[in-house]
Length: 266
Image (tube, rainbow, N blue to C red; front, side, top):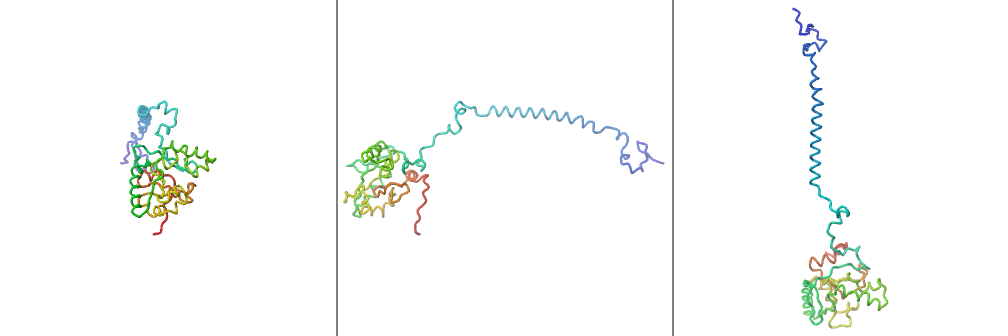
């Protein structure tokens, strides 16, 4: 018997692969439901995406920080607190750096008969240094300690005018107001009590007091501020010493100056 499928064609017609599928199935448009559902799905997806985008946009708008009048008219950085004044080299005036003035509450007397004052930490170490020098037969005498910014004004402008000195000339000898180490409360001018004629003179370097300081001052956290050929261009002052024995003083005198550690022999 010659069997045929639902199409009525012999099954041995193997050259036509479509004959293996019954007519009822082949004639049914299988892709039609798919073609009808696809636009529906796309439409639903589009509407859902639009709603989701609208919800996200509304959320971002509600949670976004509101601009104030200041933030609209000023750059963002302008609303930040201003940084504290620094002793950056770009702020230097004629080789002198700006320093904050020591608060009065931080100052104590180191010379009762002359009323010379320094910050507490510096004053304590200075007194210890004086005592150590005395035990070695050397008399260290404080000549000048704390001077306010106001006190520095006549020393720079007044004396400069009396000596007919231009600001650049005066700055080699005295710091402009606001730029003196003396108003930090950490600086002190030192003399030799046995050779007072050398006070505030370069020949102070020939005294026993200076030689003792050179050998021992670092033990008490003091250093000479203006040695010969110093990078600030200030005249050599062997009598002017500053305290660098705590964090505040160290950062005050060294921060942002690009000083490199000194090389010493091992």
